[in-house]
Length: 398
Ligand code: AMP
Image (tube, rainbow, N blue to C red; front, side, top):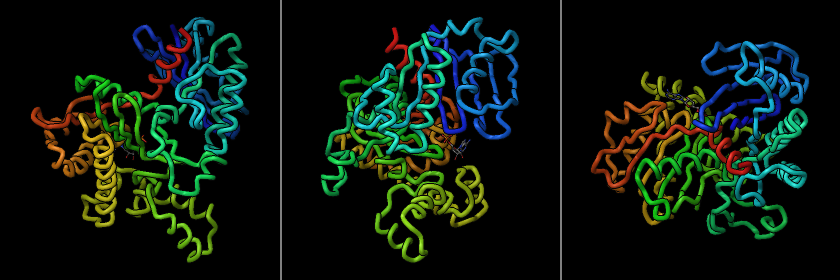
């Protein structure tokens, strides 16, 4: 059975075609600059040469058709007919409180995704555009929406409520939702398997740290807390996001700099985090290099980042009354061994010891980095959100 996974942005469309018999990727690619001059499709078929097609893509419908044409292309294609695609799984950023899992798309689902656009104005409309373009191109096929927020819907109210007037929750749904749910779901499941835990008696903490970052506490396979909030701004220090901050800072900066709330929020989202603190870059490699060269601001940024992750892990160990396994994932978590070491040095009180050689060895590959006698298993687990979307889609259409 073949499943196409689509992740649509406002001017981009990423895709992967899976053969679900062995969960292998037959082809993947990216349409860029949709609706803008200079659009291009980069197509990477498994076992064949990649190719780039530069052709106008005025909208997502044209982009989807180009992807389908490429998938059946006699030279670059990987299937002989579009009818071989059983279903399409779509990444959707926000499912609000309505969706606790993935769903087959119908008119009501489309309406609900549209209603949640208030929470994710940059993402949900783009995700919907992708769904509608695929429905147009593949009318006989089932489409499944897989929400970034769904995995976190099992959080209890004590974890998701903000201590502000209750009316704002009642009237507008102001609460913690959390993001990266597909990744947290995939990695926590894998962590349970790798650590040999009984799912119904397991306490796992996932540290998804990349350009965006979030931690989650997963008790008996279900999320009970996560660090991102109503928006992805809350929680960890990220590439360009501040993470947790006293809301009073917004007013203070606004008054001092003559800016409005939107302008200050833009700074907290796009000019803060590692970039803002280091004054160098949002990329961990650049900041690590500067720190090694003796740049103190870069060093402070890296240590502040590690400290914030360690504090979240500590609070989640408290929330679950213990922890059996900690998993690192995403760009930094999977590749940056020195950063993992920095974070783990805070975990002595948990009886955690790290095997330095193992930590150094696992970069972009899965493995256990704690010593055999460590009280908690610490692991590197590459995330695979596309595969998770394909698995969820398959489950719903089978
Ligand atoms: P992501 O958002 O998950 O793609 O992660 C992007 C972040 O991962 C960037 O800040 C990169 O600096 C970081 N990253 C990727 N590869 C490495 C690496 N080999 N060493 C250190 N950081 C890395």
